[in-house]
Image 1 (tube, rainbow over the protein chains, first blue to last red):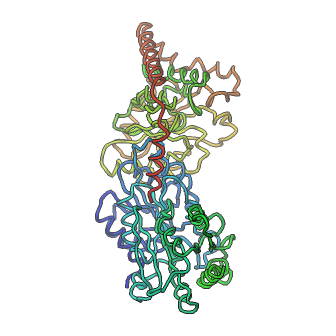
Image 2 (image 1 turned 180 degrees about the vertical axis):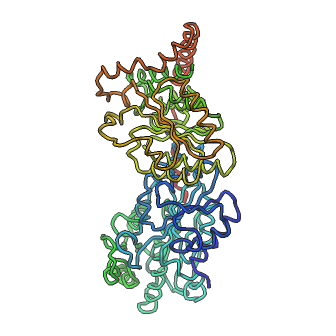
Image 3 (image 1 turned 90 degrees about the vertical axis):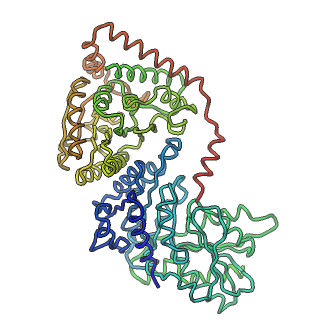
Length: 337
Length: 300
């Protein structure tokens, strides 16, 4: 059973083999090292002239990619840690995401910036953040998060070839080790993909044979793995049945599948690893709240990391980041409300 | 040569229109710096790429941009070169790009040079920086990458001595040339506003960038007679007056027969009148079009 890491590595190989316009830039991405998290493994050996190892210059790398994209290339950038995107924020906000719009639709900027996000590895305050939160809601930017249920290889290929907008592609560090197809093979959960006109898919998951669904849980990325573990326990131990909605495109957000599920359950929990205040879940909740019909209640709760920098020591880090038990408890509270 | 007059008179008209409240936002004119735009861009091919900054009208016109479309852009009309979305600092036509954020354009220009090198198009990229931009860190990252990867990019520095209202002495220490040399980028320095001298030097520098495929820099010491934007000039009038003797238009005028100069002057006046008159009668952009744009950008 292959891992998300292998799938993303395969996607990169396939993209570079398919199209000469794909250039890959990043720090320490050459073999034999193959990048800090090994998504780049083998690429510089197979495509030596199109894999460019760069100086430690995140702003310039992303600016260079924007320039490449404006002149007909389809660059992919690897930023070693999502935290380092902060160094390149101007290149996203005032450059890559603006050109198509401010040049009156005369240009396109098809570039993908891939980066590992998230904690649970003890890297501490500046190497563990989910910085995608700060990139949500930028007009002209797509923020896409891979998960283990939703064909990460196809998702990355879609971002590279089917999307002409600048795209931030989020890969959680622990997601790399998640096994593809494991959930499906176990047969405990039913996975479906609701119809949507959006480019990037959303998947939904529920316990097989659930008599009814009591609660909707919206989540993304690696947190989906933890949520699925929690809903199995809720079903087995408490006979509480949840429907999990997992978008791959965080921004702009397709709220349709979450709303459809909420209409069935009347209860919504959002789960993210980023700090809770003013985060992705806040936007999801607002979008649902605006659609609640007259006479119906909105019973909802958000779960995320504490509003603190991520600590390094394991017991402290575990306390700050949302766990399976936290999801279990939050769902119980919501259902009791 | 006539190109400088077009730019000068256009920019004077822009300031005049602004004072009458007929333009939107802000503007940064290049009155006094015309020899840089015309000298350097005149040495480029039309198929080369120019990446300009906030003070970009001269670069735009010198690279062949439509004067009417620029006037219409400043007036916020649908016929503007950026449809009224960009304004003075955000102009684009094939081969020309501008953005008013200091320094951030430089890595984009370097990336374009990488693209052209890979395509073997033979095109080079000229990117314009001001002295104030040397406070932005990303330009040094970009110099390093351009030199490391031997990219066909020409860095053109227009040092007009002021970052908005702050004189160079209050925001800059060291040497412009050494900043390039530190990245192994050859730099030529010009203390002139003579467009012929700049053009002749630029020709051989551009040829070298095109044939050797690596970056070069031109450091042009210049002066702007106009304020940074509109009403923000705190310089000593005597200092501005002192520089009038080096006005590139005056230097050029001395080279031309009076008749030829007058013809160029009249031609420029006519073109500018037509551009602004037409722009003024052009339609306003329709806000309904924004709904389509929003829908497009919201597709996830």
